[in-house]
Length: 148
Image (cartoon, rainbow, N blue to C red; front, side, top):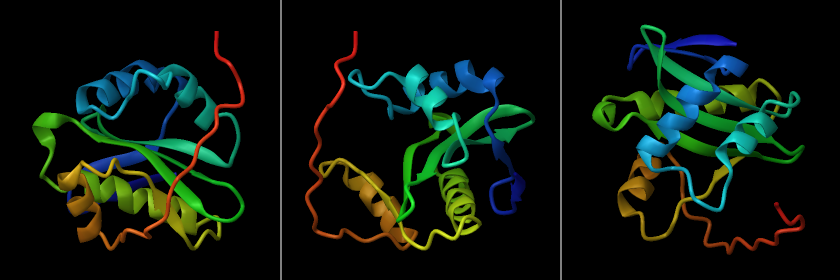
């Protein structure tokens, strides 16, 4: 999939193996990675089959925005939405989210969800401008595999 986001000038495509280093560096720079998540593993896992991918938005071939998008047969999820800090506020986040929604819609998925830490008010406000709403649900998690 290759698209051009008209409002931001990003060329958006699915990530390839060679993008891993630059994408993970962007995740760290944008502050979306967490110590308890292995970004190398997450990148590889999202690319293992057709149920997920990492979208990369580039300017002149340089990755400046990402979104990990996937579907579970019922709904879509978006993770690792990142924009290079110096380029935030220029429409790149909205463009990469539109591409993630289009990726899901092309697979027949009609509902998308994402997780935002409740104390991250600026990011919550950003997603609200895109039409996302707090569903007032509680997300529960259980780790079923011990990592080495």
